Length: 251
Ligand code: NDP
Ligand code: 8X3
Image 1 (cartoon, rainbow, N blue to C red):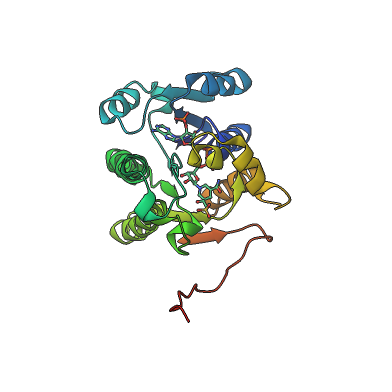
Image 2 (image 1 turned 90 degrees about the vertical axis):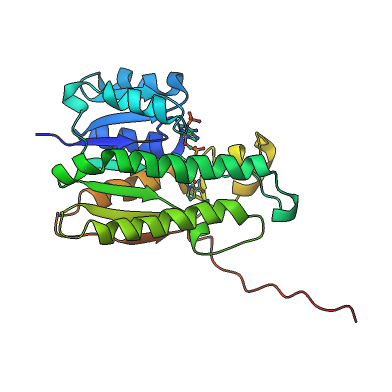
């Protein structure tokens, strides 16, 4: 019998590519996100028996609960939760950042993620299922302007490892996936809609693609049940590390 995956943030980027990857392989897919018009093509492509879509703002716990309660019976037993919905907003240094941006990132990347995870844990245990949390290299490697975004992703990574510990003996697998630069709508969102800035960032950089990350998610999910990838950090070959910065006294 085919397994069921619930993927958040399936209207774009990693989530959309993952929804296609899993549906193409015969998984039943519950695809979520706010933009309903981006979800419907998944149903058109794979059929209502294979993809169920639910459009809601993941920060709205009531809407999330209603969407879960309304899952058709064929999609109701979730084997795999892919917590992918998330965003960065702003690239400014902390002292110039907008507090609203920080709150949006915390509400989406942390609060919504833990709410959905908490809601699905009993059935994931029952299914001996799996959780893949999409974190970021920003969780591990700080950079100027990363402030609250990196903080939210550090939470995601550490929360994942904590879940893994708590779920010891249940058979539930937990992975934190930490990608570096990938070309999606991520930078468009981060810059509040600046397409030129987004294009400039990725130009000539050979970034990863959404499909590259979807393939990693699919691979992690389809490993034999006795194997658990705890953390997977992945970057494009073109991206690496730079040294510490040093502020010097004036001469
Ligand atoms: P995209 O902007 O292309 O996709 C983000 C997805 O999250 C969209 O489907 C969006 O759906 C959804 N989302 C955002 N806010 C909400 C909300 N309030 N309610 C419901 N859904 C929401 O970016 P990516 O695919 O790149 O990002 C996916 C994840 O990967 C994020 O968690 C991001 O932090 C992480 N990541 C991205 C990297 C990159 O370089 N691209 C690198 C490392 C991690 P909608 O707007 O329709 O609601
Ligand atoms: C996105 C990767 O380096 O732009 O999570 O923060 S980065």
